[in-house]
Image 1 (spheres, one colour):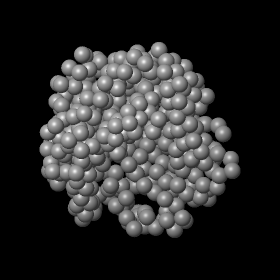
Image 2: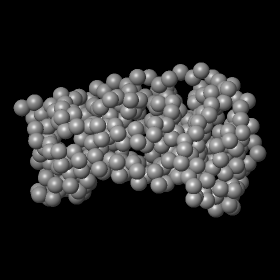
Image 3: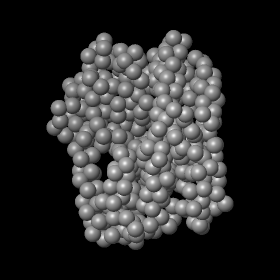
Length: 420
């Protein structure tokens, strides 16, 4: 399996990987624009645009878009994150050209029919309402907002209801004009694909686009703070975040291994101490997320209002203890988990296509798997302990709570516990 890349004269990038033995292909267009590329008055527009992509083009109705892919047994979808928007499909080998033609059509020829805008507006408002009624989802939006206040990267991807209610056709067209230039588009495909054929089709479908010299996203600055919302729920939902490295930072892999050892599985410290030994919760985990210029180590737990104070304090204590006595066995276990997750994911053509698109976005190339594995293997116990010390005692923090949370310590109290 060999990764091949190409760039059209207008900056449109293509990356492919043929996977022998497969009879299907996963392919899509990744746009290097997401929630953090929105201005304040545009918050939610990237996600709205993603919804509208499937609502009709100059040559295909919304129904025809769905039927053309599903008539051949394929699957088409999209998603919006803070840094990218993706439009992707999975089809049989013979239908690869059809899938790319449909995706190109929805990106280049949307009609933004006013009736469809109103219909989809209602769908998105329902989606926002559903998120607001899902405590273990919405608490992470509040956490992000406190971590990065008054910044695009801190705003919800879905947008606020009042702003979504106001978007019009011109708003959608303006965001496309600003952020959907050829040099912001990455075609990534894996599976039963032929590189030269896809490059030729991409040239035919996207080669006439004119670069737009789009502005980049605003830089991120982790500030921290607390969001506490009382509500009569069965569980108290608690999320804590500490500033971490971005994905280009040399300590990126250290942060990943640390979060796995701390709370990445049933053998992790938080799971064993807080759930298994003390029975304080059903769910607790830690993970490390990264963006271009910042990142977060996030801890989440759901527990009773009566036990949230104890859980929060023990979590801080466990973080401090991890900085003192993290073992080589824990690091090796977390390292194995990380490599297994990476390598198992590569058995899927969809995962390969997405990984390649992200690597092109981040590095402008796709590093060999062996290089990534070597970086994971290079993380030492000393690296993790030093990172754990920073996270436990120094890194800026943010906290969000929702439910019966009156008994939870304030962030200031947890900060004092961190440095005690």
